[in-house]
Amino acid sequence: MTAPTLVDFDEVVERFDPTLGLEVHVELNTNTKMFCGCPTEFGAEPNTQVCPVCLGLPGALPVVNRAAVESAMRIGLALNCTIAPWGRFARKNYFYPDMPKNFQTSQYDEPIAVDGWLDVELEDGSTVRVEIERAHMEEDTGKSLHVGGATGRIHGAEYSLLDYNRAGVPLIEIVTKTIPGTGARAPEVARAYVTALRDLLRALDVSDVRMEQGSLRCDVNLSLAPKGSGALGTRTETKNVNSLRSVERAVRHEMSRQAGVLLAGGEIVQETRHFEEQGGTTRAGRRKETSEDYRYFPEPDLVPIAPSAEWVEELRATLPELPWARRRRIAGEWGLSPEELRDLVNAGALDLVEATVAAGATAGEARSWWVAYLAQQANSRGVELRDLPITPEQVARVIALVASGALNNKLARQVVDGVLAGEGSPDDVVAARGLAVVSDDGALVAAVDEALAAQPDVVEKIRGGKVQAAGAIVGAVMKATGGKADAKRVRELILERVQSA
Amino acid sequence: MSSTDGSADTSGLTRDEVAHLARLARLAVTDDELDVFAGQLEVILGAVAGVGEVAADDIPPMSHAVPLENVFRADERRPGLSQQQALAGAPAAEDGRFRVPQILGEEA
Image 1 (cartoon, one colour):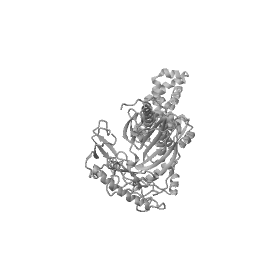
Image 2 (image 1 turned 60 degrees about the horizontal axis):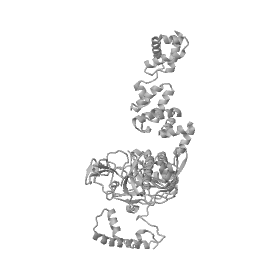
Image 3 (image 1 turned 60 degrees about the vertical axis):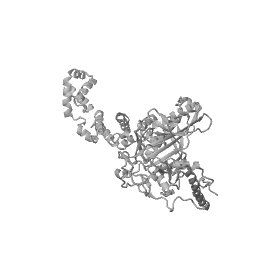
Image 4 (image 1 turned 30 degrees about the horizontal axis):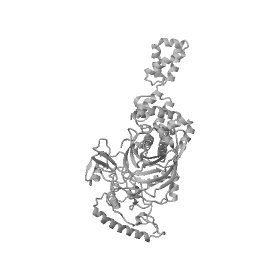
């Protein structure tokens, strides 16, 4: 079959109504796996965080991680779900080497949380309510490395290598109900939902929510129906959507692709598709198994989970201030415009600025450091702002040093550079690099006199009343002191010396 | 029979269904065996259906032999296996990983 023509996005929304559905998998940040005491750290040597339980060795008995169940319930509560008073795990049977047990322990018809919603704010400030179908507990799979194919993909691979460190890591799958009626905004709604969910999960402190490390993964379900028909078209499920931008692109591409198939008189095949990061396109994967093929049955090695009403209420009491409420509060406290708030949020700087303010800095100074100089540094290093090797406390210390006059802005940037280069705390860098502002008159007077002697014409101008000419002398002194002089004090000294001479 | 559960339906297991189950279980089953197993599986399903008839509405379904709920483990690390131990039983290994043959048919 030849590749279908992609239909221009505007035409797609003119002729079709898209229906979205989003499945988000989130890895919990528990110390140990879902059913065994193995660590869950990302990036360890392969097969060093495994045990008989997660390797599915005979006779091993899984036991549920209480902290993971509590995280699952907190997620459910934060999504306005009902917590099921009784539920079981089930075995999802399939043969695929990413699970050494040949089944995944999951929840099937008895998920821990059902029927909730999440209000999602769009760029223009309007809100879309996304209904949540369910959130259920399961375990992550191992990681496959396909060897021999040209692209590292399973296609054409000669064999595969398996690392089971990730197998058994607690995973919560959050499934929306179908989201109808988003029209041209479908890509934006999808992205905004995943963004809001990520922020919520981060506020709950239940996951690292790092899409680039796979601790938050999104599958995009999309179907098209003829405009105004009220029908529900056949959907595809696009996997491997690993960034917020990709969520938006995947929806947009799938809308254009499906419209192309439909307008050419074809039919959409219900299938799993894979998102291709490079071109922003999707390609066909396997046909969807029917759920019967997974032969789910209740997991006989685990007993039911029956959260008491008291336990649920105890957990509800631990829910943090919701991210969007917090943003509104902070914007009010700091006097930010909606645009300033959005810039701060988009730069990933809100938490950092808040922590910097908590460490004693003013909101204005803290914002300016994080969204300007530090954002540039993060950008040039290609890392997230929060991954820069400097803490909010250290930034607050630099701001305090500037406020006290011990550093000027130029020196402060050098101190920050030193901290980022691993030279220690701001005070360590000041001491080691000798960066303190020189405001001691003894040291400055000599430099001032030297500069005055070198520019007698400027001295004459100042004497003649052109005080602004002193700027040239200030510049010379700053240059001579390597930028360390207290510029204000230098100006005062220049005027004193000229007039007393 | 009050159950609407499909598993209690013994109206006959077709050869195609047995072949499908065999494929899901990655079992090579010959044509002759399909007939044999279809008959045998039907006997088993019949026995299960018999249990279903005994179960009255006031008997809650169980998936577990002991009446226990909420058995949890604290989120504390326990020593596991070393890489060498983990791979000790593997038919093939490479670079600290389990080596498995080409994965066919799943995503082609």
